[in-house]
Amino acid sequence: FFQAEDGIRDHCVTGVQTCALPIWLDEVAEFLAFQIQPLLMDLLAEIEREARREERSRLPKPRPTRELYQFKIVLLQTHPVVWRRILVKDGTLDDLHRHIQRAMGWENLHLHEFLIRKKRYANPDILEEQFDEDKCEDSTRTLMSEVLPATNRKLTFQYEYDFGDCWRHEIVFEGRRPIDPKMKYPTCVDGACACPPEDCGGPLGYLDLLRSEEHTSELQ
Image (cartoon, rainbow, N blue to C red; front, side, top):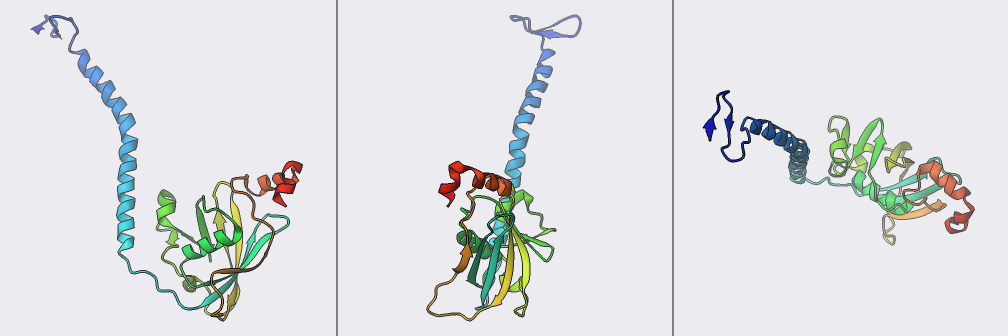
């Protein structure tokens, strides 16, 4: 290397001015920051989620009562109406979510949440960044017995499945029932019509599907 008169240091072989090196480094740094920063943000978010999961795992598990509940599930905006009636033992709202999925015929492929008395309930491990602890309760730690009336007074609330297709279900608590030792619970005791296919476009897409002569026989 040698020092040029104008203060610029040049390479003796290539003649490349080293003053261009910082500009090149700035461009590389900017490129790397653009590529790496989102990955780092995702990594930090996952570390934070894992820490919250670990913290929740150390909490004592909810202890359900021995009560048996009857629910009517109505899939809104379907004609003819798709509905089920189920009997389930007390458990978490996340348990109720699984019972609804099985009874209706859904495949549990999408996000879900409950809306009960103007409060949202969801699984924080699944909802992740959409889960706001200030506005949403943990459905994996909330028992049905905690949100249902102490008497057999009816209570109607909402269960939404697949935030894209927006399948909204009206859930009606119809009261407590005596446990039959000969029966296995949960069980579906009544209902009508098959559940729509997954990812068919919601109520409007399902209506188009029903109107299609090509699929009518398949759906029946």
